[in-house]
Image (cartoon, rainbow over all chains, first blue to last red; front, side, top):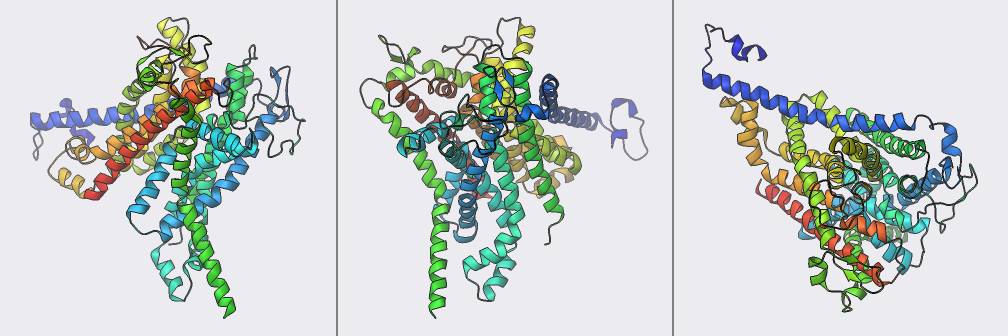
Length: 308
Length: 298
């Protein structure tokens, strides 16, 4: 194709003479392709640029020690252990809450509900739940869990807020993976006399479990990075815990979190050594991106190893 | 026989649990509205707060002792200006990238680009904010020779980068939804790919692309941490892209921590929350209706 384009290569061939109209058309085609290509490739630039810039700036401080030490000298020195641990707590608890609800909600939408105005409203609610701004989730968590339910600002309240916020992620991916199980599997099961739930429990869920896991991993990456929803529901600027203590937080304690720690370091604490917030940003970014990459790898693997 | 009945009861119970989880999304959406409204309602109907003043006045002095004013206009304009700038940057990029990914590239490159888009979407907003605060800040200072680089431009660029992934992935879905027969018919008539895209695909997918842009707007309006850190802190009507502003979301995030639970200041922030909830609700609802509109026809 490319040999036919461009005004310079217009030797009249025996078969086909290009008119001006065709040449113009082909020039435009090339231009459009080039523009679209550049626009698409430009998206790679910020990703590479941001990651490499942050890593470059954080290099002097990045070490295993940085992860496991507690902050010292009014957060101007030391590591990020309490924040790292807090994020793990928040993510795990929100995962425990959101996974069953999200999976069952998807089961309802895909296996029980018929196409009706009601399912449309449920689907609409899922879309809208995903679109609610994170700061409004924070207001909700504050109003419902912290004040109304009397949990106070605590890990529990913050995790529940995160769970509700990330519910649509799990619902969407579970629904997709349930829908990929062929209908004939279910029919075979019904035909031997199994009930609806038995079919789901023994045929549909086992066959879609890996797809569900992909969504769960995605939920982890999402909730690990969120800041606004936990800011007023349980995360604090500073909390003193023992270095390397894994069980430092209780359910009703407040905690530090990586995302919150980055915000604090970069806006609230004066005279922070430059590398410290960069180090925190890199740890947060690498955590979120690698968890996300894990989910992508998992999905690609699944797609190529599907049994049906 | 009793064993059978027992199993039936369990089955019923499980079915009810599933139904309950199924409608959980509805419960939560209403729950969010109810609880945000509940916390803000006290002030909203108290007479100390007037909606007219909120939408027309630019004086935001929620903590003043003598001269309390809840004028939200500057905040609304702040959100609006940053969102518009973000969309001016993100829509061309996003749509072109969506067209490229869907129509012009081979399967290998397509998978790679989609993964990159997904990773770009996964970057936490606080990291974007940090990038705005450090990298973008110094870039803007040196390019435009301003004392501080935290302004509409900075926030707009950061928000654009954050909404591009949504626009690309939803836009690509919309293009993919156009039947292949359309493409084949156009190509068979001797159209180039660009002519096919321009004359056939874009008109056919325009609703889906519009929905993609709307969802991008929804994301930009609701974004909190990035704009909190990147737009500077100044409640005012911006006159140029180099002015600092403050958005609705950033105001809640910045002030909620300082207000005591139940105070007027606390309640007015929940009223701002109701406004935000309503905006994104309408935006998401219309995007959804537009998408379903095409599906209904096809």
